[in-house]
Amino acid sequence: MREPNLEKLNALVGKLVGDLGISLGGASILLGDRLGLYKAMADGTVVTPSELAKKTGLHERYVREWLSGQAASGYVDYHPEKNAFSLSAEQDVVQATYLDEPKVAEAFRTGKGVGWHEHSKCLFSGTERFFRPGYNANLVSNWIPTLEGVEAKLKAGARVADVGCGHGASTIVMAQAYPNSEFFGFDYHKPSIERAKVLAEEAGVGDRITFAQASAKDFPAKDYDLVAFFDCLHDMGDPVGAGKHVKETLAKDGSWMIVEPFAHDNLKDNLNPVGCVFYHASTFICTPASLSQEVGLGLGAQAGESRLRQVATEAGFRRFRRATETPFNMIFEVRS
Image (cartoon, rainbow, N blue to C red; front, side, top):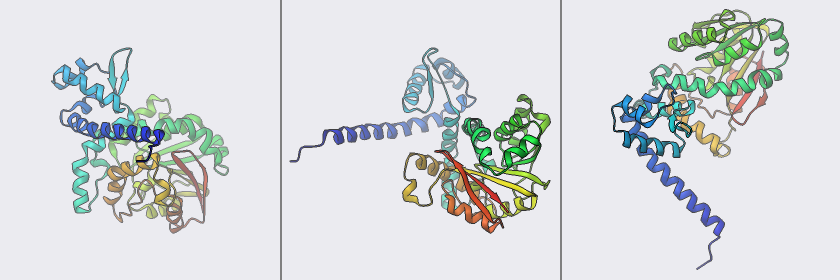
């Protein structure tokens, strides 16, 4: 018998322990869904086990053990100074995938989609909270300066459309940074638009942003200097049609900024932790959303640069370049 490599043996044991924890955690997640524990924590409030037990009508000792396991798995956050727990933005998104699993399972059988508006409410707030830190950290300081002439236009006073804006996190960041510009946020999901209006007022930029319900293929044309799609093009059933409409709405020297999840063109190069997150999210959210719409191209959250370039080319654009990237996003500049 060969002597085992202790380093590899320890790594294997560690993986086995981790996988066992994941397997047991899956049952705990289902339990939390069925008992309404996640739903009771969805607003992000920090709660003690006794407070959560009271909110859900469950036994405190069971709830305490469940919360401890969830914290050990990283599914909820633990606050030791208060001996309390909370659900983060990322965990909101994960929760939505579990809550909506029956809908997605049915879509697997029928081939039909699951529209964004058909998902649980926690997905909408969770998505906004998930993406907001990245926009705060990168949009103004790193992404916009890499676009040809765009930053100067925004500082002087430009007209900007943020399409698929959701709760308006990206729109608000730009409006705060460029007070001389005028911003328009569009989303087909009316509750998200209403929430965006409230958040813009709270941020003090409500007077510089006009939010309206509209899809990517019918938002009003206003000769925009910049049209931005943040993490949403791959969710659309007809991204080529959306691109054609963008081309019609841009000013003569306007730019289309596309921000998409980071991905390589080939599956073998996306088999990594980032790809793992995006493929799983796409299975439950992005691909079903696309397949619920006309055309139903189903790009998915790991479309890659080549497929995105093809979309822009078929929409009639001649210039397409990757302006910059982060470990989680690719930023493209598209021009006529």
